[in-house]
Each structure stands twice: as structure tokens, then as C-alpha cells.
Amino acid sequence: MAKFFVIEGPDGSGKTTQARLAADALTRSGVHVRELSFPRYGTAGASLVSLYLGGGLGGSPEDTGAYAASAFFACDRYVSYRTEWHDDYNRPDGVILACRYTSANAVHQLSKLSRDEWDGFLDWLWDFEYVKLGIPQPDKVFYLDMPPELSSQMTTLRSKQTGQSRDIHELDFEYIKSCRDAALYAAKRFEWHIIPAYEYADNYKLSIRSREDTHADIMAAISRFGG
Image (cartoon, rainbow, N blue to C red):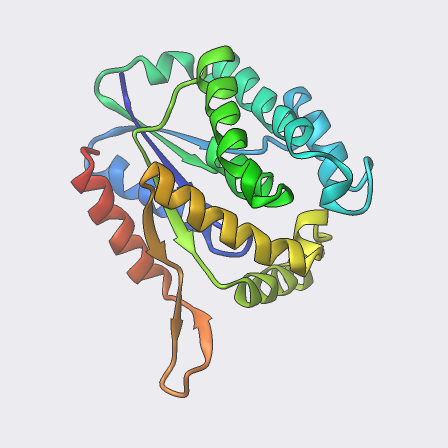
């Protein structure tokens, strides 16, 4: 089987950029890399995801329960695995590099539940995606950590620069804050490798970390875990 790594993190943390940089670096070193990015907007498998994130099921993330929303995202991954990267995963000499995966459900949906429900939800989620649906389980998740206030700033800036509207996750600051708590809980339980995507300048101003420094940490982690 190919080595399977996931780059996860809050909105605005640079996941897409870092996945691209890592894939390019691995390819230059002679590794066969299959890149994945979820959700797969514009595909049939992600139609319910788009409906949910676009506010079609309610204007707040909490309008759709954690289990229902998780099923939307999980089915997108299942369809993509069966139709697009099954053969790549079965290559013994390759690397699968995904931007978001099951870990995104652990972050974004876990936060909708009370703390005493978290372990039960995570048990259900791992069984649902990796056993019931049978999609591959990653070898390691690299989590790009970022404080919620910086995540909100970055998504607002991206929206202004691209003209793309923020989705219901990105618009709800209290939800963004609860997602970070959920992410750090899941990271501890599943031993994700945490990489800071932020730093404090000399004046103690919070800012996004340089992409070069974050990239260096990711490549070191990939090497450490067998990529």
C-alpha cells in the first residue's frame, strides 16, 4: 500500500498551499504522488456537502446534526476512493497526500456536540468511514494549528481577494472557536502531528507563519513517518 498522509487544519491555515508544496517536493525526489482535496466541489459525490456548506440546509452549522453532516462528507470520500484513487492507494511505492479527510469531520462536527458525547462520536466516525465504508485510514495526520481569531482573519481576507463567499463554517466565529477545541482533543486522542501555522511577531502581534517554515516542518514529518 502507498503511504497515506493528510494535511488538516482550520480554514485559512494554508492547507491547500502546503499540500501543493509537499506534493511538488516529493515528486521532485522521484516519489509517485497522488494528490487529493476534499470536499470535491462540483462533483456528484459532494452535492450534499455543497448544499450544506452553502446554507441550503440552514444558515448555521448547528442546523445540521453532526452525524448527518459527517455522512455527507464521508460519502464524498467514498465515491472518490472507488472511482479515482483506489489503484494509486494500492501502489507499494507511492504516496497519497490529502488536503482534509476524515479528520475534518472530527474537527468540524465534533464541535457541535457536548463534551460527554465526543468519544462516542469519534468511535462512530472511525468505524463508519474506515470499517463500514471501507475507505483507507491514513498513516498520519499533520494538523496545522491556528488560533481562531487568525483563522477568521485569513478567511475574510481570502474572500475579499477572490470574491468567493465564506461558507457557513467560516462565517460563525463561535463555531470556529469550538472547532479548535475539538481539533486539539482529536489530535491528542489519535496522535496527530501538530505543526503551528502561526507565530507572534516582535510586537506580539499574531500572524500567519511563513509558508517556507511550515513546509519545512511538514517535509521533516513526512520523512519521519516514512514518506
